Amino acid sequence: MSLLTDFISEVKVSGLMRTARYSVIMPFISSETDENKDPKLVSMFCDQIQIPGLNYNTAPNLMYGETREAPYQRMYDNLTLSFYVDNEMKVKKYFDDWQYSVQNPVTRSFNYYANYIKPIQIGVEDIASKTKYMVELRECYPKTVGAIQMDAASKDLMKLSVTLAYKYWIPIGGYTYNETDLLNKTNDGLFSEIAGVFNGIASSPVGGLLMNYGLTGLQNKLTTIAGYNI
Image 1 (cartoon, one colour):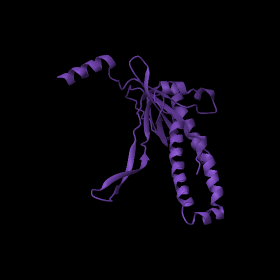
Image 2 (cartoon, rainbow, N blue to C red):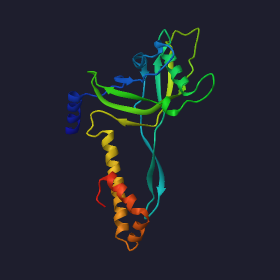
Image 3 (cartoon, helix red, strand yellow):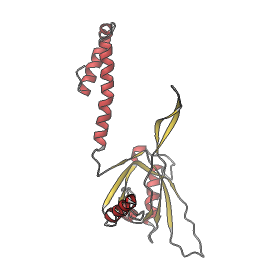
Image 4 (cartoon, helix red, strand yellow):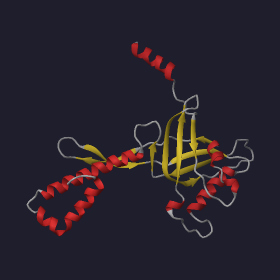
């Protein structure tokens, strides 16, 4: 009974998040006409979106005893969004322009990857419109812009489905770390392992012979980068 009381009390104080409270920040896409260059309108017309998930590819790893599933690669599913289409078709033109930046519709030549990828931010808000959680998707581009079904007998609003491919996502805001810190920690761990290897080489019987063949220069370079005294 105490657990139920604690649950009710927590819900009354903190509340529960709603799936209808979200925001999305779409990137600026260059186009030939200024009317297609306002990403705020596109963000405003987004009526469905997903918070991206994360999945690991695994492989069986049998050493002793039972088989373990060991992760070896991160996998990210494509992101599907739905948009209401405005009366001027600006939402549709926005994604047309983005797709045209991937491949020229006339020459059929594909552009450089770095020229069409963009970041997208997705925020989760509470009922007071305060952002409680936010992620940024890196290297996005529209993989699929869905067909729009027209129907003379229908009075439904026009909607557009878009599937975005992206490389990875990271949480931003409200965390005790940032991406730079994570990269620095990763590099520290890597160079620490390298330092251990060089220490082993230097203390081995063939260490002096290896150093004479140019290993010293590489050792000094890594020492400078990592800040270790090897």
